[in-house]
Image (cartoon, rainbow, N blue to C red):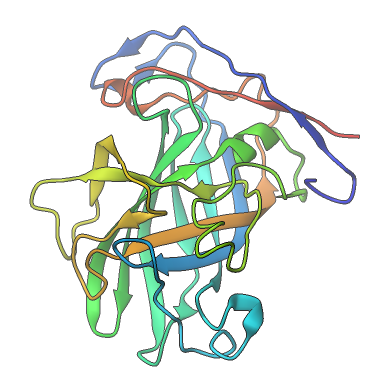
Amino acid sequence: MKNSKSIRCKKAVLTVAMAVALGTGCMTNARADIVSFSFSGLFTMLSPNGTSGFQNTSLPYYDDPTWHYGLRTQISGGMSIDTTTGAGTGTIAPFAFGEAGNLVVHDLTVQAIGDGLGNPGPLILGNMLFDWNGNTGVPVSIVWDASGFMGAIPLPTNQTVFGVGAIPASNNWQNGIVPIGPAPIATTTWNTTTVAGAGLGTAVSGTLPLIADTVAGSPMIAGPFNGYNANFDITTISVVMTPVPIPATVWLFGSGLFGLAALARRSKID
């Protein structure tokens, strides 16, 4: 359920015919409709083969079985996404991660990419940097399944969304350690293609085409966790501002870079 008012969602996948000037980002009758929301969720860091996790030794996680003694860490932040272009930015609040102190995420950008193959779909590509233990500007890429989020809009301001969407890829890690359940924006097993020359301090660390594997999250290409797979699962969304109206949420994937596709889902609120 999305909230105590029991919001029932139904899927509606729309293929939208749009004229695009390749490389210019132009679209006929485009509207810059922004959806802004705060969120909470869980961070999980898996080993390169996905069989073990990096344990957060910070309190309260290290001594709390609720978070399996630090193998899951609570996160919070905010995001704004343009429903016309599918592009957006976000923030993740610094969080305690081990004895080295806070893990600080910055320069988070997102882009809707359909199914990642130029067709309609619910995937969102995120790129960010983080600072930790003297390492700065470590590039991180992530591919999210945002079907729960897309299915929830348009939503009135001050509504919350939780318990709907895709199952995060790390949900069944080690036989269901701290299961997450459906999440509006869930980490997948997809990996990005590394941009040539990407490294510390490079904001764009991953792009299309996507690469399939069976490990939850996307492996880091540099820094203290080289090869480890970062999972940022957004489990609860609180809508800060929704454009009115959004007749059909239209995602323009990359203005010629990613191809042309769209996905929309509508919600019925009782």
